[in-house]
Amino acid sequence: MMPDSTSLDPKWGQPDGTHDPWVLAHFQALESDVLITTAPKAGTTWMQQILYQMRSGGDTDFDNIDTVVPWLEHPRKGKSRRQVLDDYDAMPRPRLFKTHCTAQQTPGIGTASIILTVRDPRDCCVSFYHHLMNMTDSARDMTGHQRPVSFAAHVDTWIKFAAWFRNVKSWWPYRDHEKVLLLRYQDLKRDLGVGVDQITKFLDWELTSEQKAKVLEYSSFDWMKAHDEKFSGQTESGNSSFKPGSFIREGKVGGYRDLLTPQLEKRILDHAHAELEAECLRFLEVGN
Image 1 (cartoon, helix red, strand yellow):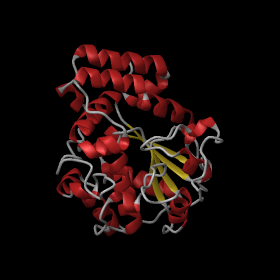
Image 2: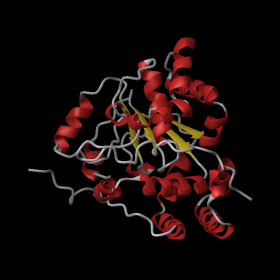
Image 3: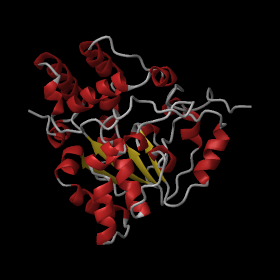
Image 4: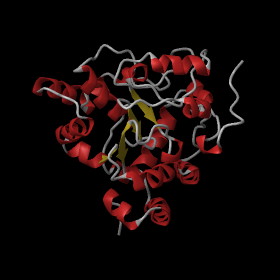
């Protein structure tokens, strides 16, 4: 019998196509674990690849990034929740996970190492629009997403759902926590080598110059774009969740300017100013 989610603390969230609160509530974090805790489209897959390449020393033989850096709270078709946790227990150490949870929903704070990348909300909003448009119909059905009827309608839904705002607002108070590393997407784009050095120091891992070179090569936009199939999700049938070659799209800083009108941009920024502290906005470089 499937374990019941109804008796869980509401802080773990409500179950849906991409979120299983029971797994979160029963996950036992290890001190060696590393959790990537970003908002959607804020560099999650990129950080999965960076960390996996750092841990593996440059392995490119994996079929899909989710098999080596799983999405912690994502339901697994055909497996019970107990089996999911057993699979996690069997993973090689240090275990790497991604999650889109807020700080309140993330298990293991203070035990596991948390790496959080934050990205301009305007870029995240536009990137998620392309994410939805490039998903296959079966993938949208599986995750409960809908194809936006227009870009303006997408912006409205994105602001109302508020995943980016909840994520950044919840993690900002942890920015100086000894087990949390807060990185800006634009800094990683500017100089990934510096970012890899920061991560290496934070995790107290060892990385030779040859291994670092492989990390930088295999985590580059060009390499990931050329191997797009390794990073796009999979449907229950095992097929790609995205149109061929469309998951790794552009990854630009400031790419929102190609699509966002001044009016829609103002709506996003107004909401950010209403939700976040001035210091956080300055850190994100979206302050006044």
